[in-house]
Amino acid sequence: SAVGAFAVSNGLVDAERIPDNGVCEVRIWQKNIGKTIVNRVPITNGQVQETGNFELDGVTFPAAEVPVEFVSPIDADEALFPTGNLTDELEVPGIGTFVVTMINAGIPTIFVNADSIGYTGTELQDAINNDEKALSMFETIRAHGAVRMGLINNIEEAAKRQHTPKVAFVAPPVEYTSSSGKQVTPDDIDLLVRALSMGKLHHAMMGTAAVAIGTAAAVPGTLVNLAAGGGARNAVRFGHPSGTLRVGAEAIDKDGEWSVTKAVMSRSARVLMEGWVRIPGDSF
Image (cartoon, rainbow, N blue to C red; front, side, top):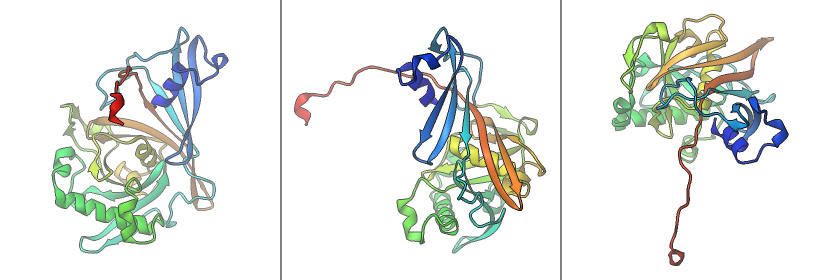
């Protein structure tokens, strides 16, 4: 979400494309997932507008809203559901067999129901990140899911592929207190989601994982869709450790094959610091 604003502020966007007031559209190539992302950067008096009243849980200050659109989050030759199924039974030796939804959208993600692994979906970071047994369980699920999704050939390769797939657990909405002390009620959200990144429970939600959530929610029958109440929907608001987030997606069913054209969410971005770091010349 900050790339567009940085590009405008640092002369990487042609001046004639930047309005005096309005929105500057910046197309971004996200190398990590190999996809195009479009940022719509708010502009005031020819400069990037950072301040505003858009509030995003997990971000300290209100700011200007920056819509982020993931264009064609999956390739035409890539299956949205790598196994061909909306749900699968994933056998994880030594832990159990779980019903999961495995999806390629935004970033490859494995969804599992919270209650099937002993959670409620309201957990905060300390409940999981300080539990080595829980972290080991999630990593084992991730490794076996990666093999099932065709991302790796065997379990041993999982240690060298930490960034994907992600593992997330979902549950129907219930009231909980976020890490900032905010009360989140069932009326505020459609479902609960917690996601792990690089072996730890994320403090909020990764943008690419939010795309996977929005896409899965748009397909009736996935675990994400069912946790949100089922049925057709083009947007969901989910509860995460820091609060809530809304994400939308357009999913299409053509002859039994699901595809997604785009996923959209709103973020914010601002300059945190700038300056120089002085390194002694004899340190090399």
